[in-house]
Image (tube, rainbow, N blue to C red; front, top):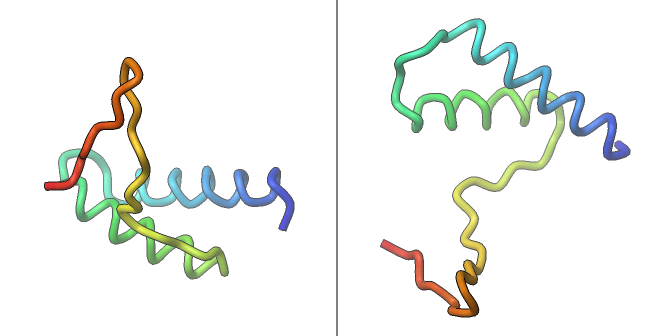
Amino acid sequence: MIENEISGAVVDAAYKVHTTLGPGLLESVYETVMDHELRRRKLRVRRQVMIPVVYEGVVLDHRN
């Protein structure tokens, strides 16, 4: 898939999840359903990936 196809699939999946579930659920619910929807569309998914955060030149530790 090229970038435009991937972004289109992600937006379409997000729209489907939003219209199916509606507002007001916990973020973890939307994350789980979005993961399912993207995998169903044959996209590789990684959840809650740690990335370095640099703020004002300081690398911040954002682990719990």
